[in-house]
Length: 240
Ligand code: UDP
Image (cartoon, rainbow, N blue to C red; front, side):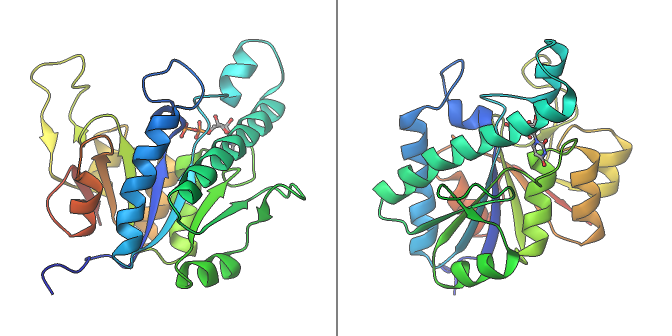
């Protein structure tokens, strides 16, 4: 039907930056509430939603290393733990909107989060529960973008959505260049050849190799998430 969602199971990547809203650091409660409302809408339509959250609003491993605080592996572990904290806040925000939510971590933290397993996740999703995946891939030297593509493939999502601050992928930074051109469609190879900073190479290669389409869109644009789900043109779509 015209009013039914085009995608039945999706993986949404929310960066740490997206959670911090207009604050310099930390987590913005009103942003979390807005996001929860948009996600509630999807759940109401019967869409199964998996979410991977970043941690860049709190810690990034490479930055902690550069600052001389810790080595890279420790820094990445701190970064992964930061995503757990973001996930805890997102889980509570979703539950305040009466959305049944599971928080699943790649790193076991007994008593705080469930440990991730793809089989459990798929079972929860089929039950109509939102799954929030945290601690990235569980390994240093990876990113939560890669985790998003990995989890998306594992749960057999038919679309991976990357929420950004701009409404898609441009040939150059639109905040610095007035003549930047937005792409409506791209192939994964074009993203790689033109070195477009959509996601890191590992993430892009995973999506390409497993033929999972990727949609880059502006989460702060009202109705954008919904129109992506309905299959309407929105942001930039990257396919094989
Ligand atoms: N991280 C990691 N392995 C992963 C995912 C993340 O070590 O699989 C660490 C890494 O240090 C990273 C930090 O967690 O900088 C936060 O993740 P990311 O930078 O991807 O968050 P975002 O940019 O989406 O906010």
